[in-house]
Image 1 (spheres, one colour):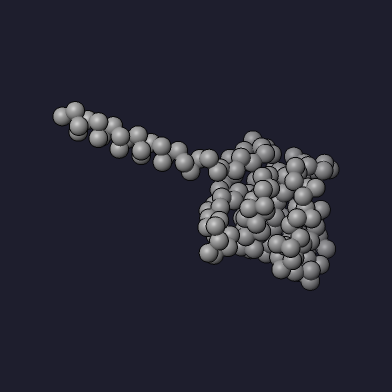
Image 2 (tube, rainbow, N blue to C red):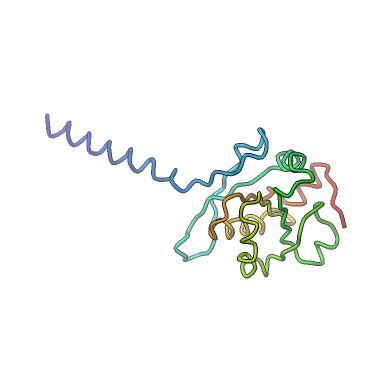
Amino acid sequence: MRFTTLFLFCIGSIVVSFAGQGKKNKVTPAPATEAAQQPTTDLMRVRPNSKLDTIKVNSFTPLEMQQVIEHYKGGKELLIIDVNPPEDFAKGHMEGAINIPFDEFEKRVQSLRKEKERNIVIVCKDGKRSMTACGIMVANKFEWVWYLKKGLEGWVAFGKTLVQ
């Protein structure tokens, strides 16, 4: 009886200790607005066969993105990076966005170190490349990074415009 109780206690302790392990690596985003304080977190593969198999990245919906832009309007706390090719960027992008093409992104991420304390939102056409770019930034120790779910297509479908 004592052995069974001790055994069950040990098993329970192990389960509880492993249950808390996933919380250690959670990225806590800078609260931009009340609606955006709990952004969506997605698991993604950054690089196949790397030590970093999966990483948590945060995202905004178009509605949350609109609220973030309104909150930071005119300030320097928000940086929007468009990872589309330069020709697509020229056709239309979010107001105030800078262009770092996805093909060059990993090479140029270190040049963004001076922006590390800013809130950074990465956008692309459909959200896929920006999600990967967001993961690259998180893997490089950037904490305040999100990507726009559904990308610029979702932004336009939400009724927002792009500038040229």
